Image (cartoon, rainbow, N blue to C red; front, side, top):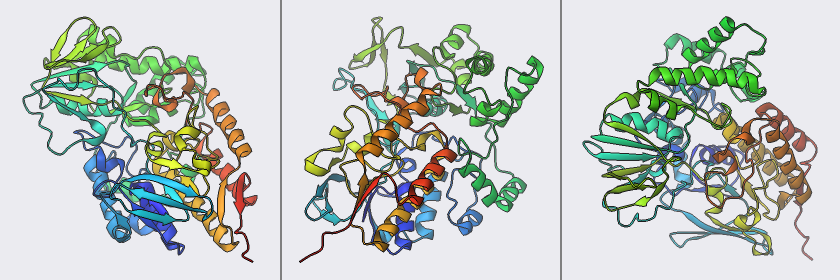
Amino acid sequence: MLVVGAGFGGMYALHALRGRGFSVRVVERGHGVGGTWYWNRYPGARCDIESLEYSYSFSPELVREWEWTQRYPTQPEMLAYAEHVADRFDLCPDITFGTSVTSAEYVEDARRWGIRTDTGEVIDARFLVLATGVLSAAAVPELPGQDRFRGRVVHTGSWPDDVEVEGLRVGVIGTGSSGIQVVPHLAARAAELTVFQRTANYSISAANEPLDAAYVQEVRDHYEELRERARWSFTGSTVPIIRESALAVGERTRRRRFEERWRRGGFAFLGAFDDIMRDLRANRLAAEFVEERIRAAVDDPETAELLVPRGHPIGSRRICVDTGYHATFNQSHVRLVDVREAPITGLSAEGVLTADGAERPLDLLVLATGFDAMTGSFVRIDVRGRNGRTLREAWAEGARTYLGLQVSGFPNLFTLTGPGSPAVLCNMFLAIEQHVDWVTGLLTHLREHGIDTVEADPGAEAEWGETVAAAAERTFYPMADSWYSGANVPGKARGFLPYAGGVGKYRRICEAVAADEYRGFLLTAPVPQI
């Protein structure tokens, strides 16, 4: 089988499948392992989930031997971890680096996939596993006049090694996670920094710090227990959601709880009460606390109000985790431009043009515009299933899968952590391990029973699509335009992409499907030769 991508999903797929005796090869477009953490090298790139959770759990030896230095690891530390894993499990001999898969076509008669790469190689495989990552296809806006701009344009999702910032006039478009991380670091080096903001986002202090040795040992002593709890939780985290309503306590108790969670930092804030994500009144109380913190951090009241999020509940867009982002705007050389009030109209030779007639001169323009999430990395490959139908065509009106794992009409194709799975709503390592282990179990079942092909049943796929949509409707997510629903990519079909019913519930569904002879999948044995 062929695995596309040597990020953390592809690396574990190689290790797990190889361990079951399958013949596996990985093709990776980068020149090293790490996936997202290989490409996102922008200043300030950092994980927003704590290191002791955002890591593999399949090997107790790996857990014991790798030493994390901080609660929230930086990109260099995440990349070093990926490289250590590749060396530790001898993965690189089975990975072809610096090679992109350009197309994959299912050959009906042979029941195999014909895969082509940008080097001209043709690869024949029975199974095709797309471990291409759900946040790896950069969303790059088309800016009129970009060919005239004399400065340099870079995207945070494919940051070059030779970017000069010192003493330059720098602009940043985008204030999602990558923008919020990169802005303080650019401000420390640029002569001038202009941040172009369309939508202000809720961001929680990371409260990052070096890891205490005693705390690390305590986690290791109870690691499997903690990890198992995370696997069956709603969010995939060991940080508990406090089972109490924000509306049932007094203001003093509520504020103390918010303060405690703010000091703890990160996503834990939304677990201060169990109704923040299901009752708009409780949600507003949490939002007001964060908005108060933003206003306190920013000296200029007008700038502070621009940085206060409007029009969506807290948590309905992905919460950001930052270190000093809002205080950055107190520096005299940092400016904030509201592009809802004055939209960007294009680029001139000198810089960015906005609808109010202003021209803002720049030497470097940073696009922190995020990704074509959950589908972009799959459809940028020309994948053709039965009757030559492309995956892009299959998803033209919205991405549909069965359990986020397979697409009807594409036999023996697996979409790891794909749309319809909880992937981006939980700890990605937890999602990766669950998907890979489940697929490995299915493939072992096929081998043991002489089954040649497996694909999603169209009815099961449609029913799962309804389940995904219904789960989203029970949340606040549809109340915000976000990359969760494809709103950040012009022309992309709208529809909530991840499964929002909870990590534990999803795992139970997958296990029940497997126990019921892989209900919802069409398993076909080879035709006997006469």
